[in-house]
Length: 220
Image (tube, rainbow, N blue to C red; front, side, top):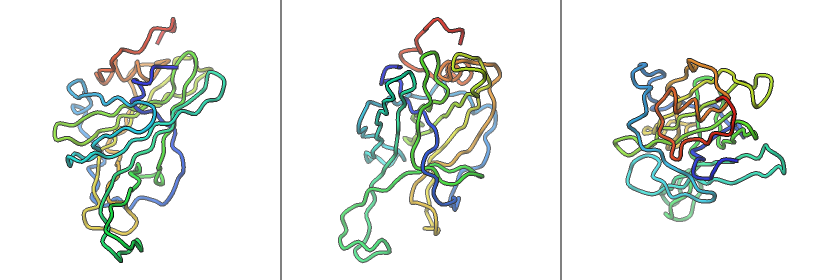
């Protein structure tokens, strides 16, 4: 298993819920020139709670990273995102005080239902799914997800698909959407075949993983 500091998130979508209202979402695509992330700071996650500003408002939110052991080579990390926001007394959420509530920060795509948690896909040879959190200049987070086709085995080299998520706000209070969420703004295939998705992010997107993914003898 990779060091905890590299759990710059990875994931398999878990817990599908309602479909996105897409309120205030960023554009559906980005120009190819924006696919270079070499200038952006990587946010490293430790096991357990991580106090991280998700939307760049200057307040610490919560990213929780929990380990799921399988007693084999396929343990994985389970990651969830939360933010606090005040709710007025007697509001629609049936609260009785103005104490801030913890809210789930889910992920949306244009086609899929809402997903509220993410799991890595790990093998002894290579990881097939991972996510990196990057800090934008204005303070919010961009999430870069890499997902590899299975191929013939975990040690195979196969196609990698990248997905880019950015923070979106439901500023108008549109029904069905949370106050803050991650919206997928870009999705594209890698140019080469890879065994490990972290190597793909370093090679094709310029993501500066520190330390660099270890060399385990596999041709990545």
